[in-house]
Image (cartoon, rainbow, N blue to C red; front, side):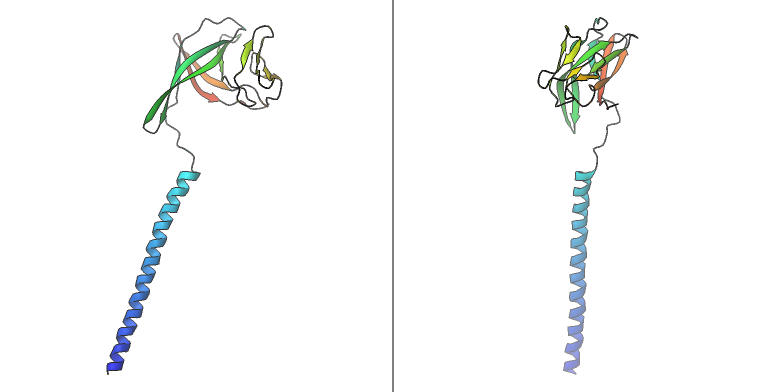
Length: 171
C-alpha cells in the first residue's frame, strides 16, 4: 500500500508541475505580446493628426505690387505633446493677377536651400545649385525636380493667415 500511495502523490506532483509550467509560459507570452504590440504600434503607426488646422497669423496684408514678391516673417506655435514651441518662419508672398495671394515656402525643392528673388531676371534663384523658379513657382531651370511648395493662404479682414505647407507635385 505504501508503494501505491507514493505513485498517487508522484502523479499529482507531475500534473501540478505541468500546470505551473504551462501557466508560466502563458503569462510570459501574454506579457511579451503586450509589450511587442505596444512597441509595434508606437514604431509603425502614423502620428495622429490634430483635429484643428494650424494657421499662423502672418500680420497685416502687405502692400504688394503685382509681379513683385515680398518676403515676410511670421511666428508659428508648434505643439509637441505638452510642449509648445514658438518658431519664426518666412514665406514669399505674391499678388496674383486675379487679386489672390500665393505664399511660397522659402526652401528650394532640390535640397532645401534658401532661395531669393532676383528682380533683374524676375525669377526666384537658388544660389547653391542654380535652380530657377518663375513668379508662379514653376521650375525654369536647374536640378529642382518640382515647383516650389506653397502655404495654404487665407485672408480675414486685413490679416494674412498661412496654413500648412502643401507640397507641389510634378506635372
